[in-house]
Image (tube, one colour):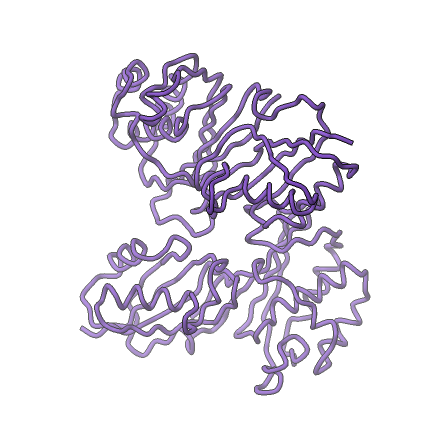
Length: 247
Length: 247
């Protein structure tokens, strides 16, 4: 029986060259496809909600694939988790109608970025999952600034040159939020789709404002420019998580 | 000026073949010694409070080493953390008198073991730092059983054959405790010194009793035997942490 199987996937991206398959490099897609192909004994190609870059993690990446099998979802989950490495976990397996696409049917995505504001060197455990930013954060200003991203904007200044030159850079952010737990800040962004590096560059801009005590006008200016130095702040991938995809 | 420097070290042991130096294999001691040797431009050999096995982590391992240097402790910490990989962190640097030994002067050590009792496959993040045990735990029984280890016992049944055959296997446990946070149980053991694999085997025995609903008599029996099947339960190293060393 031909079936379309949807899986919610959680991973620690530290040891992978991003989600998307690459020749001769370990990627999440590569590992999942070869695991599926080997136990189903046929080539399986997966579709997925969104690429994540090298070192980026996920709580709720979504994939789907077409297979001829009778294996029920519950057993599928069990079999896959037993065969996958422990840094990739299948959280949920569901049957979908045959035309479902995890990529094209995604209505909304949430990413979050974790910032460690502790003054001392980060510990080796949470250090894998957060960016170290040993400066003060003015939470009121941060909450105000992060809201400036909400709405439809041309995020040209907040992506890579190659993206800027090849496609529309208009995107819509539906909502943002800031949560804090001790020395950790969690910055949430909700939108239909995001440009390459967009979340990291938005967070980079917010943190530059904190570190250098800048005025919010510079952020408004960056949002109105095709290219702006504020959007160039590079921050590490290990603080970024694809949190959830909505259908 | 000749100085004896004491450091408190935190590490994620996942990617190392244990603490102690081994030829051609990455170990915590190897990495710390080569980092120290390279920036002090002389061979440095470190002493340490206790070996940890492959995959075991530490919050508070303690090391010390003799050097001729004027660098103050604060700067030493900064320099080391900048040069060490992020999974090894120096938490504290202190000057000690020249005869101080992190190994021989240790009065007490605390280890803890993390058990994940969640029914679903562990997530890729905490999965690195805990053992998956998807069974029910009777906390009252566990608390009662763990106390049976307190005191001076012959832990012969709770170590490796080679240890059993080459040295005294009498050790003293000063105290134990159980803490719980959601699906995670933390089992603490405090003692002067521990045999190879002792903590893992003690936790293994406690968990076997939970899983198979055994009577506590079997644990008392194991503590009175030179070799006992209850002490043979192998559990993974990644749930074990060297928590603190007292001087």
